[in-house]
Structures are given as structure tokens and as C-alpha cells.
Length: 308
Image 1 (cartoon, one colour):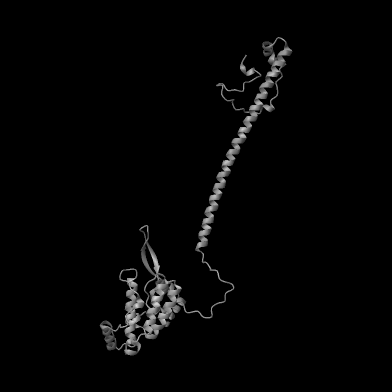
Image 2 (cartoon, one colour):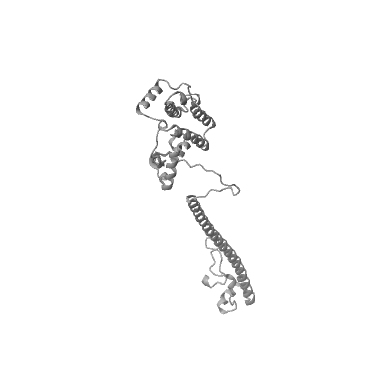
């Protein structure tokens, strides 16, 4: 008789390894009719007593079915765990993708926020000042921010009017272009302060004494606002004050011209030598400044009809 007619199939594979995967639920299996003629020969092989043979066959089928039920339960649980793990992995990947998308969106939002114009805070309890001086030009601001020499013209009434006119026409926002090399040895185009704001720019020595005096006072105020070191502010303050009090105002007919020439040259030289072994204290200038150099300058100006 072929093995396919046996009522008790084996749950193990032919290699004696793990049980073969069940394709149907043994809980739904029904014990065959072991009393039928189909099992007559099998019953005869088991026991001559038909009743005993049927009992043994029934017991064997039930035992095997119970084992298959256990295998099925384990198989179902294994499948559930595998499916749960796969679902958890899919959910993890989905969460990671969502988190990455949210992170990118947040970065883009922050970057967009950075590019938006910002309004600064203000003190809600503070009243506005009673008087506000006319702002200096962007050109002068940049010079002071960079701690560089700046002529006094931008601080004169005329220079301040030019700055005000430039702001109205937006000329002060028009900057000259220059090439700059960064740390990566790359050339970039940068904007610089537009000196074209001051179309009437003049050297300090060509200012009137009133222009020179008003501009030097405003210049001192602005370097204080720009946060210059106290020692530099005090030296320049003493320098300009000593020029205001100098005897050349009364002794020489063109003494003020000589003072302006001296102030122009010495201030340029002071800035040029700052930080070097040639530096000096600009406040400690000589009392006698009308030496041969300035006398020649004075004579030249007198010949040209230059007036203070």
C-alpha cells in the first residue's frame, strides 16, 4: 500500500531537520472515518481486533494532529513576529524619512527667516531724544569702523548735507565694487563705501577754520560712538584742542592755514605709523610748528591768495 493512504502523515522533513512549513491549519482537520473499508487493510495490520485497531489509529491521528496544532501555533507566532518586525522597520524608515523631511523644512524655514529684514527691539519706556544730529555718511562710518584715517570734510556741515542728500536719493547705498580673495583662494565681488557721496571732498588743509573746528568736534563724537580705544580718543581730543588754543591764531596772519596744513599732514602720518616702531603721541606735538617747511607752505598759500 502506498504511503499516501496512511492516515498519520509525518510533520518532519525527510532530512530530519526543522518541520516542513504547514500549508493549512490543522485545527480545521477532521479525523477520517477509520471504520470505513478504506482503512480495512491498515486496521488488519495493526490488530486483528477491529475495535482495538480503530482505537489505536484514532489515538495516533489525534496525537499527530495535536503536534501539528502546536507547530501551526508556533508557525503563526513566528510569522506574526516577522511581520511585526518588518512593519516596525517600515515604520522606522518612514519616521526617519519624515524626521529628515521635517529637519530640511525647518532649516529652509530658518534660512528664509534669516533673509527677511529684521526690526530691532526698542525700550517702550524710553522717550526719544530732544535733538538728533544729522548722521554721517556711509563712507565716513566705514572709515571709523575700520579704524582708518578719514578726512574731516564728511564731518563738516557741507559734508553732512551731502550725506543727507545721498540718503534721500539712495546714492549712499551705491557702493563701489572690488575683488576680494577669501581663505579658499576664491575671488569674490564685495561692495565698498561709496566715496562719491562727497562730491566736494577736500583735504583738511583746504577747509575754512570754522569748517575745520566744527568737523573736528563732530569727528571726536563719532569716534567715541564707534568705540575707539580711550587712549586714542584722548590723544586726538588733546591734539585738536591744542590747535584751537595755539598762538598762531593771533601771531601769524595766515596762522590758521599753517595749523590746518600741520594738522592734515601730522594726522595722516599718525595713522600711517600706528602699531609700528615709528608711532608717536599726536597730542605731544611741538609748540613751534612754523618751521621752514610750514613757512614755505605759508608763503605759497599767501602767493596763491589762499584765505582761511
